[in-house]
Amino acid sequence: MYDIVVVGAGWAGCGAALEAAKAGAKVALLERTDMILGTGLVGGIMRNNGRYTAAEEMIAMGGGELFELTDRLARHRNIDFPGHRHASLYDVTKVQRGVEEMLAKAGVEIRYEHRVDKLEIDGDCIRKVITSKGAEIEGKVFLDATGTAGPMKNCIKYGNGCAMCIYRCPTFGGRMSLTELAGLKEITGKKQDGSIGAMSGSCKLLKESLSPELTARLERDGKLVIPIPPDVKHDMDLSFKVCQQYNLKDYMENIVLLDTGLAKLMTPYFPLEQLRKIPGFEKARYADPYSGGIGNSIRFTAMAPRDNTLKVRGISNLFCAGEKVGLLVGHTEAICTGVLAGYNAVRMLRDLAGVELPDSIAVGDAIAFVNRQMATEEGLKYKYTFSGSVYFDRMLQRNLYTIDRTEIKKRVVESGCEGLFNDFTCRILRK
Figure 1: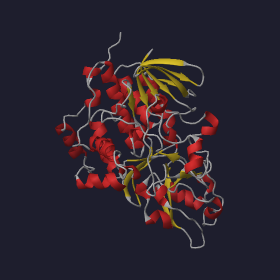
Figure 2: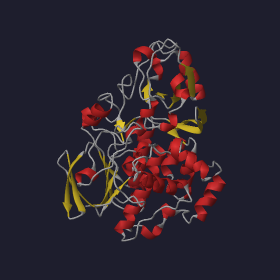
Figure 3: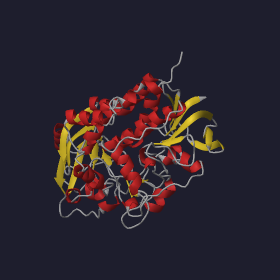
Figure 4: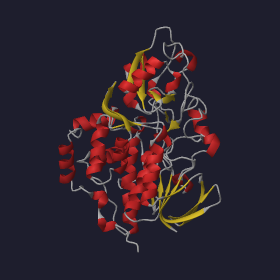
């Protein structure tokens, strides 16, 4: 039997598993596909705008290992692009192996191609999960980091069809949710027009398919902003993007590329026939997502009811992290919630109360604020992130945003949270 079973190995699940293993827990990390990190395999943007603040808060609290890893794997640092400052771009071709090695060193057992199909529940307590391979995996505490994208039927119903994105549902089966399998009613996010979900915000081009001049400039500068010629037709409505911080005029009028190892195109999709009319893109080819000419994954269709310790309401031994927490968008946000959920899962093992981070720091404020917003019909129409839109505006209003590391650490110290995630009082001691 495992102490903690984490289901879903995106950034949130990896953060949760790592934090629990640091505290001595025996941890199983179950992943539906054959690689960890999920959208982290095609993401790459860190430390932009308020994400810098959040990352430094986590480091000061002792939960910053994954941020330090992406810093080491950065291809570019201090990159400015429309609406964003001091971004760091990690190499998506190297990050998966780096995180995998970190988890292995911590003692996390990763079980690939284990899609959870069933649960065995006793009252309000999960006893075991049963996977598509027939494995019956028992645990004391469970953690739902299964995300909110897919399965295929949702992308077909609410998007532009199954775009065969990085989630690869046709290959490994659609996402399953512990929260849903436990019989709990999940929360559904909406677009501004009231329709369900939101589309992932970017897609990937092979750098080798661009002109040598564009590739050289992109690798030198880390970014490219190229005006879209008037004769190129595209009907992008960026309001349906999950990443509302990129719903700016600049992204309508320009091709914005970021160098993450691949060429990250900052729109959910762009018709290939039209893209190839732009000088330098004549031979352009999409990498992941594979169908970047027509669409992308639909997300935020299945969020868990939870409190601010990230405990799921209705099941006594279930926590959540990442997009299951609510309408928080991004890798930084996923890691922050994952670390807190993993930490509180260990506290539950030790019969200790879960920790709710104070709103005097950005991470704690965001977790509580989004929870309140999701209780309202209007709040369900927005997406929240440290890097822009509604929540970054709140950070500015509350003077939570800063890139001064000394100031950030001082704030964490004053909140009583310095070194929190290295707290030995909840550590599980083994011979």
